[in-house]
Image (cartoon, rainbow, N blue to C red; front, side):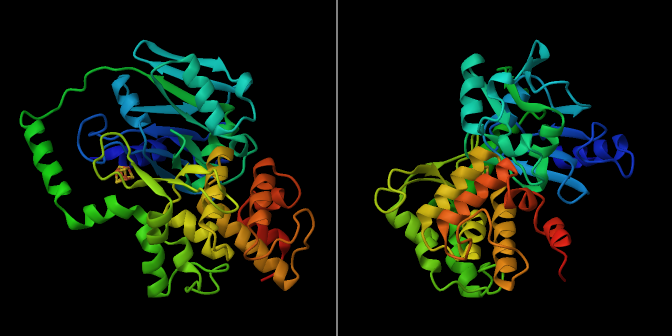
Amino acid sequence: KFIGGKGLGAKILYDELKPGIDPLGPENIILFMTGPLTGTSVVTSGRWCIVTKSPHTGIYLDSQIGGNFGHRLKKAGYDYILVRGKAKDLCYLYISPEGSTLISAKEVWQRGTFETEEILKGKHPKSEVASIGPAGEKLVTYANVMTGKSHMAGRGGAGAVMGSKNLKAIVVSGNEVIDSVQDNFKELTREFRTKVQNDDGVKNRNRIGTMMWVNMSNEGGFLPTRNYQSGVFEEADSISGETMLEKYTYANRACYGCLIACGKANKFETGKYAGLDVDGPEYETTALLGSNLGIRDLGAVAKASEMCDDLGIDTITAGATISFAIACIERGYLEQHDVDNLTFGNDDAMLETLRLIAKRKGIGDLLAKGSRAAAKEIGHD
Ligand code: SF4
């Protein structure tokens, strides 16, 4: 009746939550959901999702994420995890086929998601980790949940809900065999794989990933540009998928078992960001941290994307909120104070603002609530 993590998660949330509860209060719940095909070899079944009441919008949230975590959770013998209440101190949840336990996370307090994952994987070999960064601990309303360095449940602030529960991470290990429900499951899976493999749209997705949308949306006149004041960015080609492929991409990246492999690993060998080696960025990140901030250097976008992933912030809302702040500064509604020259096109100011948001310092504290709440505080129409 309620198919998939999203459907079942919505049903559980509806049954469990009383109307009007605070999303960052102990009465909220957070669900880490797999679907009926998770852990099998079906293409794209590596996707899983987090369901909760969002601290950013105040309504139902399902935030979709890839990587290997969902697959591992299923192999540990679980369909989903439900977390409620609040731990006394910062902790992480360790789950295996033998059961679950809460362990102190003091060691990874205020650490970025990359380091947190590395440390926890060192303690629990052959595990997968989903963690929050400093932004989640500081309850930034659009804090994300990260796994595998480049997969995130970005939208809606699931990371802040984890932070509000003093839950730094979930670590899961297990390798149980998953039985398929239907006799001809393997045959059907093979047939589906062949169809996917031969699809032209899929071939293109494999070649260039979501970054194909930069030039396409610019040509269509809907590429977010300078706080959505335009749909055409005159420098779009410099941050496009075609430029990325030609100059920086050296490998494809995939979620568990996915032959589409739409992720792109990029290395920047020259320019201001020389030495940067990163998975991504994706289209939406490039649109919001690139053209929407007037930034024409793909290295700067990739750097900002990596920084958001490590600090645990959603790249999309972060870009939209910073562009809103710049538009306010231009109109004299907001003062230039703790960031030097926060203007469209200034990548240094963008990176500094991201740091302040994660720490909730200065202008970052205002922007950590997102543009809608910040607009209310600033008080202009
Ligand atoms: S690699 Fe791309 S297409 Fe495949 S599951 Fe992950 S996000 Fe989806």
